Length: 253
Figure 1 (tube, rainbow, N blue to C red):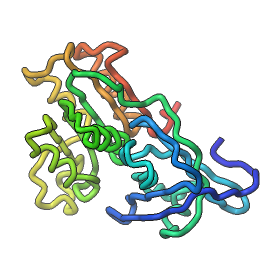
Figure 2: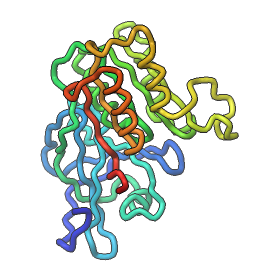
Figure 3: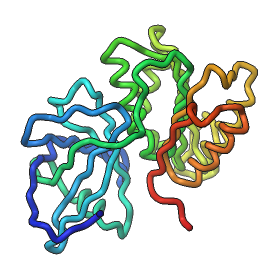
């Protein structure tokens, strides 16, 4: 459930916050208890007291699974009129929240030598950052293609970190950021890929170097993109076991 009338029992502290834009921020939250291990790709649930009720929402972890003592880093977009994020975005370091233990089935496989194709929109990049950071800490980089779709270039979170990995000869990482509104003045000066993430994915799948037998795909973001990407990947020859996906909110019925 997303809200409850149970007593408010804050058990964690916001220890750091950095804002990418007015509506996108990273929050680092540390539990009062010993940190609970997680598999890269999983999420935690965060809660705040709102009008004497506990309102909770799940957020994918963006931090490395090897740095538990630093707390869980969450990459969050403000949802105007939302039940939780308007209140979360008013918090500052030192404030208290409710934190539920990590869970979820969207997780990095421990051993896999295929090319990893990560496709994300917006804050759906978070679980992939956890996967990449964990692999980096393990000194076990894999062949990775990261497609990150946003509306505006200033929403490309973790851009410098991804660009650094892309330039690192120890990694075989290809970073493909794309903006869906290239004509907007806010994107003035952008010279990279344009179009929605699924359109860019279609172009990558058409490249001669693409080999479905040597690829595993992970998809996370808005539901329309996730469904479209899944169809493209299946049409390109990936089977059920080779496509992992996470919808950031339920698809409208």
